[in-house]
Image (cartoon, rainbow, N blue to C red; front, side, top):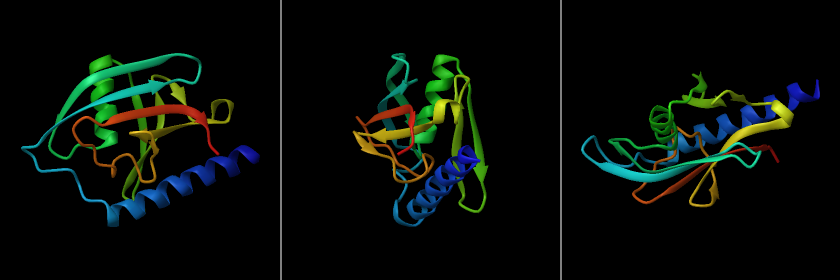
Length: 137
């Protein structure tokens, strides 16, 4: 029961943040813009994967960079689209699923906790994206 409440709360907060971001954050550039950033994935068990100089064209987002890193690193990312928020929630990265040990996938960009859905957060040249599997607080 507690797990269901925690998960529902996490989804509600993430999706509400995504809805907020949809209205207040603009995309980063057009189809001809190239953005290069670094992404790290912290599994919460002292395993950290880092992908430097990942490049994207067009509407570069935290979500897009995660998918680009997955393609580059040959690992799976599972996610769910929530139409009412027009946003995605990451369910698992490389087989590590939300809810395990009360931990969930969350992101930071340049040291700042992500306050909008990953698909709504623009990325600029030189940004540092961190995905961490940590307890939701």
